[in-house]
Length: 317
Image 1 (tube, rainbow, N blue to C red):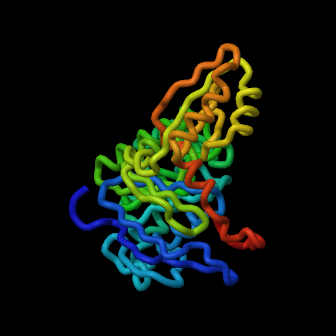
Image 2: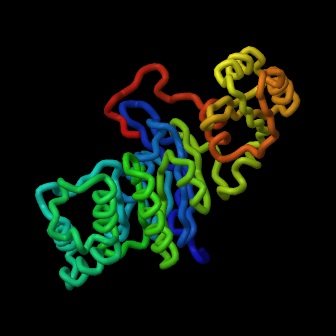
């Protein structure tokens, strides 16, 4: 991850219908990094990704992507970037091979057949090469979409919630492929809502309603947010939740499987809240380290929706 950053932009701003969707956003991504991009729906993640890959011109800001000017060189940037959208955008009535051949020709690649064969092998698609894309399950469509993104051997891969709606095994297989590409020097910027995926990223930027809230090494984020936390197990979790809500003193309260996590910046107030459930039959209260999910919930709770006074449905996420 040495050398000039692959993405180095400052002050990126985009407005739609007078609303600021991305507000003076800075991002610096080193070569070979897997960089996570987290935030609630409507926070400007997709708009930011589209500006970075040259599909959308910023209204303000400047910087470089792959050493190219983000304002002046959008066409050149698009040639060197792989962009996987939220929705499957290939042709359902073409086979896997036909889709990849079509994409290869769009990029005017030489040796189309050899490149397609290599892509099929790399993503485990060779045995299904003749299957129509429209008949694939979500996980296989995801593999095909990634193969199409990588067929021209881009240096930067932009993934917009790529694993939404696919099963856990398909998600794991997908991330194995991303790590393989990273080992080859491909830089990845990926937006996700899954915390088990986010922890696999080298760094994470949290964005909420157009503004960046934090940008740090993944392992450092809980500490930078500064939360104390408790894990509460009890046979009567609903009663525990009721008591905690009455007690207050926390910033985050969330169910984690068969337990409740509470977290907050005020350690004394959090300890007092935890005492409200200690006398429940079978209750166990343990001090834990706040994790990425608690940090995410805390940051989102304090964010202000830039469309709180009326949503323009034409604006992207």
